[in-house]
Image (cartoon, rainbow, N blue to C red; front, side, top):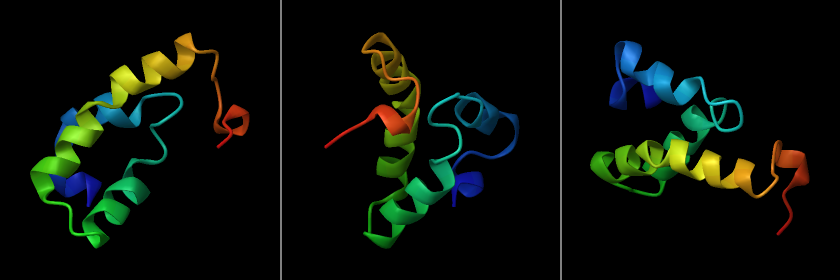
Length: 68
């Protein structure tokens, strides 16, 4: 699903993120299974770099440090 939405080298921008890079495929599949349109999925992934920056600024450097 991720590769379909972000073909080629463009995907590397998101897959290379240290914290979120490894979760995109599963996240896109989950959104797709819950009937999110492709454009909505793309917008969520495109927000990834800003989300990751906010997490790092808040002191989160791994998912192990996140709590509900």
